Length: 299
Image (cartoon, rainbow, N blue to C red; front, side):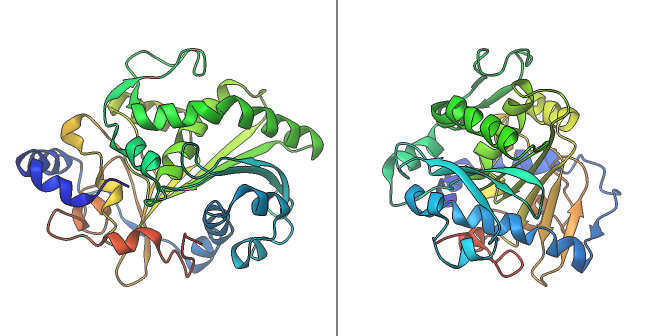
């Protein structure tokens, strides 16, 4: 992901974004998750971690401990090279009764992946891929370009998986850049799959993906989005709000104590949530990979 130290160039504007976030209703209730609610996310954490494996290993589902944690998973297809195209895979989870589509996060050793993150310009979604989405919905151009590389291939494989396993649910997961791609999938897939399919999105270390209209669109159309942030991970605070970016609702924040809390609304400014807990002076990029209930999102 984009180095957080770059934000020192925009300190005044960062403060503007913080002030804007502070206008959100601070009286919204911050709710701790129960141990069973936290545990329910663990399979998705392992699915997100598995995206860092080469696709040949993922398709054979023999890529080590992360795969072993979801032993009943049925891989259908995988691809990507971790550089020009992020790794991805599609398959079916009998225990969760859903088709899984997962995207790799940023491999900072690969320059093309870094350049994708650095393309910060907000632009409209491709009307061929996102028919009917309002023109005022704008997204990170680099994320949109990365999503477009595999959108139709992944969609075809999801359709195959839905048919093969008589499934009626699709779950998108990802970490970092992969989280951004998973969020875009959550907007894209309902436009191309038949009615009766339900959707769920679980992301980790999600950077901001689009503008206010995008966040509102997600809130209106994706009732089952959870974006989980770990402690002082700075990645969910970029790209910055002063550039026009805004997170949708659905944040879960892991506090330093290890307690997971649900943060209602968009950009909740509570000190128990990311906007109030992470700043230019208080951040730790090492928190980006986890652990998320004991799961590290890397190979």
